[in-house]
Image 1: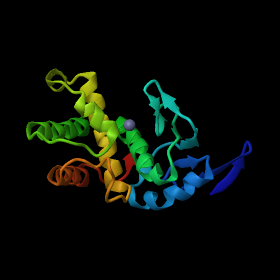
Image 2: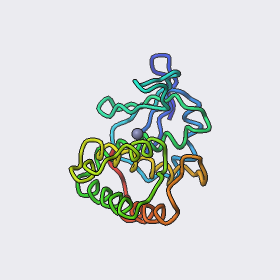
Image 3: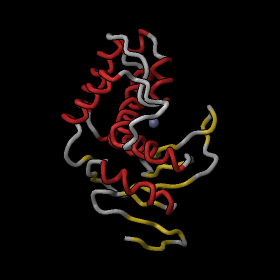
Image 4: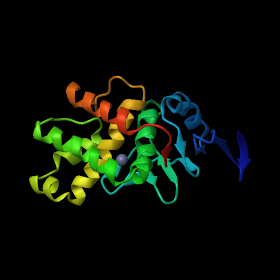
Length: 192
Ligand SMILES: [Zn+2]
């Protein structure tokens, strides 16, 4: 479905793909990746383009506003699919419930015990590098933010269709256990 509202072309996907692409090139870039993603249920999420997007640390690829149900993107077309999946999975993490969040945390704790280095995206990797012993034990805010970013980067690795990327630095056996976790825990229609 496609309609003009307020002068902006909005491309609305099906009920299980509740995204409104306000920047038509994003809709085209998302077609292939939407086919690989599980179905979603939720009110529409607006996908917006905002060149020059920054946070206090500098220029960033994207930012998700969960309560406002919108995501702003500032990434290149080449990076869009990976970043799109990452941002959509912020909404999944938000709704997924404590049991599954804690189960994912357990995967990460096991990786740390096994001294696994690397991650599946820079967003998770720099947070992992900044963790101290106490963060894990106390489930500090830093630890919980790391878990969230790791979950979103794992989803981006799994569903983006990219086999290789400079930011996929986690060793193969740990990737395999995350893949298994997603296969068991992330199935059916996801609330976003
Ligand atoms: Zn993120």
